Length: 88
Image (cartoon, rainbow, N blue to C red; front, side, top):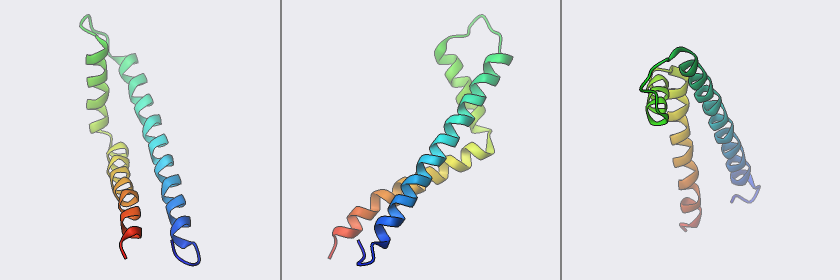
């Protein structure tokens, strides 16, 4: 933590942004699931195959992939912050 508290504020902002990105990803995933459910009629439709079909659709979704990469970076950044604060 800086004397002016800037690091804590940045950490809160980063955590809030991470939460927002995860929420948007959940919305996109739900939209994909609804679309798959509406369009896919199959006698071999099991929950695991349905999940696989949704995941496949998400891999082609540009915004979802972008958010996924940003979430990974944000998680890595947040995980690295406490370590950086403990090193003298």
